[in-house]
Amino acid sequence: MKTQARIGTGVLLGIVLGLMLSVSLSVVADRRDTANAVPLEELRAFTEVYMRVKRNYVDEISDSELLEHAIRGMLSGLDPHSSYLTPNEFSELQIGTRGEFGGLGLEVGMEDGFVKVISPIDDTPASRAGMRTGDLIIRLDDTPVKGLTLNEAVNLMRGPRGSDITLTVVREGRDAPFEVTITRDTIRVQSVRSEMLEPGFGYLRITTFQAQTAQMLVEHARQLQRESGGLKGLVLDLRNNPGGVLNGAVGVSDAFLEEGLIVYTEGRAPDSQLRYTASPGDVIGGAPLVILVNAGSASASEIVAGALQDHNRAVIMGTSTFGKGSVQTILPMDQGKALKLTTARYYTPSGRSIQAEGIEPDIILEPLVVAENDDNAMRPITEAQLNRHLRGNGSEANEETDSRPSLARRDYQLYEALNLLKGLDILQARR
Image (tube, rainbow, N blue to C red; front, side, top):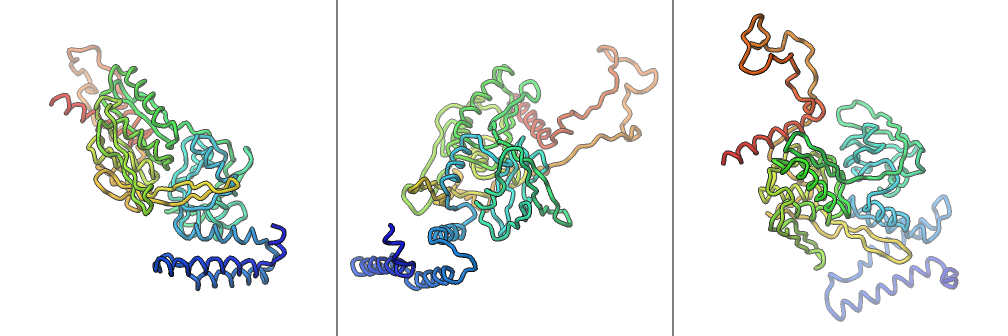
């Protein structure tokens, strides 16, 4: 290694280029396959750029640093999700799939050179600070995002627990950029939570897909079954769920399907062409199912929504999903490094591509805020409010109450999903 360092960059690159040239000539001679030939003109251009930067850049820069920049540039030019991972980045990615990592609680991508929020994760510093799906982050403290790679931007957003970072954000509907200061924290994501909305009607929320998500969902669903004595219907909430591991999405889909294809992938390499099918057993016994999605529902969320929609197992309600239908494979390298490389595309059981298309809901329902109407004059008068009205056959007349449930004010989309479940339950009972 020391001898190579003394040779000089120009000679070293010349040796590398010569080896590539001999390989190329061998390929052409032996196989006569020009598609596999090394692109000599482009390699010459790369060598020239490399040497000019090495000699003329304002600061001295090492060969290893220049080559790492070249690798990062090669991957970032492919798509927003392929990247080169240092040992620390690779380790953090592995930790993230287990549900604990440091940062703000944002799932992000790159768009036009800026960091775009795919979705804030529930109950994290970012969600509590009001960050939204679709926000563009243009500055991190005093550092402009333009020109940074996604990994560099993410590294700047990470830091010690309790430290602050100020994001400059561009949001649709706002005339000017604005600043949001967020305090970093350790992000521990509980990927599944549940509650009973009303007797017989349950609610399951998945915030992200981790290795144990499917198992946790089954446990929560069985608990809801026990509490209700048998569910009449279930709402599965995938809003602002940025995705996660593929096996988590397959397992969640399988929990509600008795049989059939869940998802398949297609890529150039033979090992990227996979098919996943369901095994017998529906965790809620075929009870009606409504899935809530929005523009923050991505990747694994779209796999679940697409599979259950294609099998007519669930009604999808909300707004169109994000449209991330590509598979990223982690390819470990020497010295703890790795490549995160897009290797395939997802397809729903009916053959629909999720990539850049997303999942269209069966029922479009925009998020609305239901507010209290304080004008009593606007409320209709009923017989029970008339002076000296006759009493009914039941108990004494009840005092006037607000007829709108609190759920409508808390979450209007969830309120409508519950109403739909009730209607489906009535139709199922009548049949």
